[in-house]
Figure 1 (tube, rainbow, N blue to C red):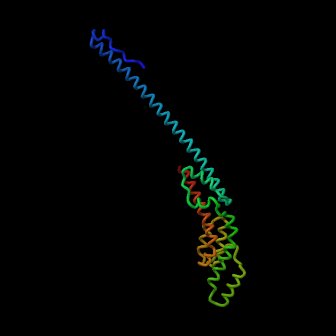
Figure 2 (spheres, rainbow, N blue to C red):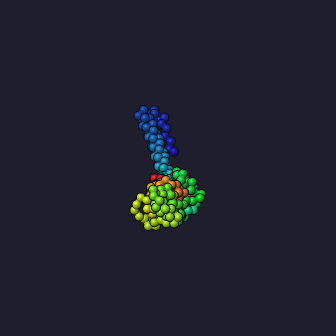
Length: 226
């Protein structure tokens, strides 16, 4: 670092102006050094800020990739009925809140659409029988007809119009086959109370799946917003 030039004794004796010029020169040199130091410090701070921003961007990209992969694994597990606690841990590690319904099903898996479709006929037969027995009719012939139907266990397999329990269940089953569980639950909600109670186990399983798939969509939206 250059030192300010000392004022020459000869210059001071010769002229006050000479001494003043010498002191001014030293002060200017000192100011230049200070300005250069401040500029260097500013450039260093800017470089550090850029490095920090780049690091944060790289880390965010890595987190997003990990979360996306974990979500894909959760979706696959929902389709297969497998457990999915490991990918759920990856999602939580990214700072994303996990809905309770996903946590509850992580160890044992969620009912698959195929399983719900397979179990629907038996539940529907029980619901139809319960609904019919709840309303046997006012006449002897009507009661006999209802009894025969409940014993036969016959029901419509193709969707049809109508408000009777058989028609309702036929539309509910059609909704299950096309993967629209919410529509199936809406139909089941129109059954007489005994019929709804007979379907309660199946309904609970369907609600688990709906809740889990909705929760995955919520998590995916939260991940995109990060």
